[in-house]
Image 1 (spheres, rainbow, N blue to C red):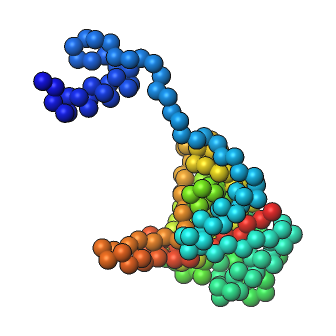
Image 2: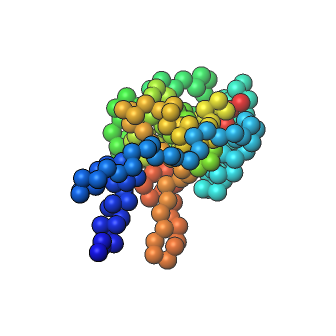
Length: 211
């Protein structure tokens, strides 16, 4: 009599098309996968879904046209009270508001990064369905420490970088780059389900959607 374990293993072998231990050939037809690989939302609905998901995570979203970006960044930093900001190499924001101290990361220590009021980065792609923003360390995004140490992360994201589903994002990303997947501010919950933000990264994530 076949044990439960043997039955489970036999079913796995059959699904994978591998021969069973007694030499009988298992089914070798391809495994049919029915998961969605591409979304079908229009751009407006896609952006709306991303904003909704980011809001569910406790992130703040601002929207602006490309020519309004400097003013929108200035407003976000003013509302935050952020005066000293670190930027990754490759991110040029042009004219900065008066009184803003901008530090470019060229190998800053963790202590120096921790001393700033926040960080501004771009992103590689954003996933509307999961509310996830992915950084890959490209120019303008910086190394992982920049998005993990400061308490405030302001992320600049263009409409053209928003996709619907995870498989669409995977197809756009290079697997040998250092990928950082961000779904809202860093947070955790204890056994009492009390949510605490800022445990493993920024306490506050703000996104400027440009387009």
